[in-house]
Amino acid sequence: MGTITGIAAIGAGLAAIGAGIGIGRIGGSALESMARQPEHSGMIQTNMIIAAALVEGVALFGVVVALLQGANYTNNKLKVDAGAFGFSSIFLN
Image 1 (cartoon, helix red, strand yellow):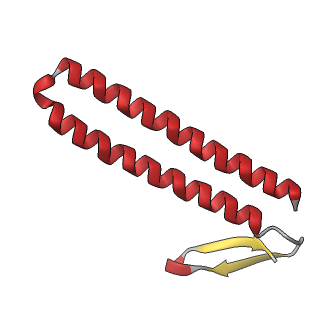
Image 2 (cartoon, helix red, strand yellow):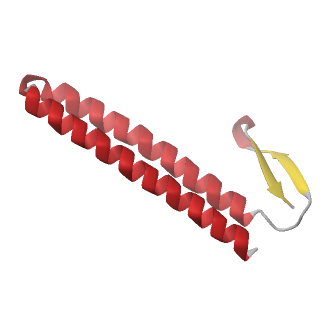
Image 3 (spheres, one colour):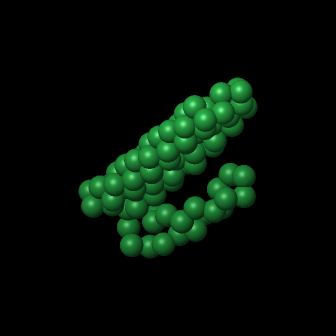
């Protein structure tokens, strides 16, 4: 169980690093755009915040999935379970 927990931690870390890079690029591009066109800074800032929130949501989903997959890996028998909201999750039981 320790190996999969380590792999899950690596997956969660990669999701968080990817989100950090993505949000950094969004912020940098928004600042550059505001410097070039200051009259549109309000609209650019609003779009930047929405985009950053969407990236953060996807990253949070990736972290949760990685940690849940690591926590549910116990045996060598594969089981598919229909989860909430119609999503199916594959885990080992």
